Figure 1: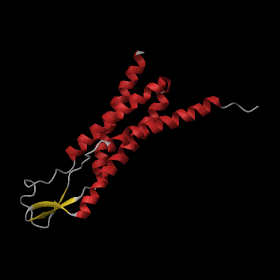
Figure 2: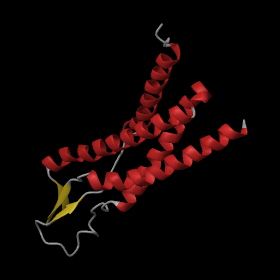
Figure 3: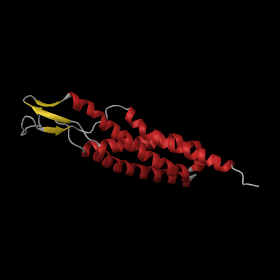
Figure 4: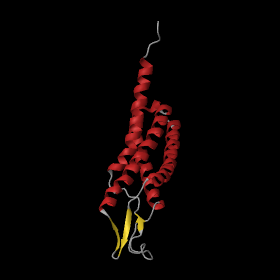
Length: 166
């Protein structure tokens, strides 16, 4: 019983480290909307507001991809744990998503406020912060891992029931 727990712990630590990598990847691929500086401060145009979805979509795509790869490898290596992988995948991937979100928001552009637009001229553009403000985008992380687990389980079931040719 001790060996699987150590394995789960090590795989979880690897996933949390991948959460750090995912934060950097999210920061690199996300294109945050730009605030335009006016006489009254920084404002988002209507077009820029629509563009905020791209930041959330990038977070979901990065999370699903990282979790899919990690989940596939873990499903193959730790397959003897069976159904116990399901709740563990959900908890571990949500934690990694939290790490990626927190670090991405820290490392990404800061939220333009009245204080941050001082010294800028009217018409200058300031990037908005990386934001994920609902729970739903975080669900892409466990979805990716669980999809990988489902595929690996299905394929291993096919392999175990296959009969050699006569």
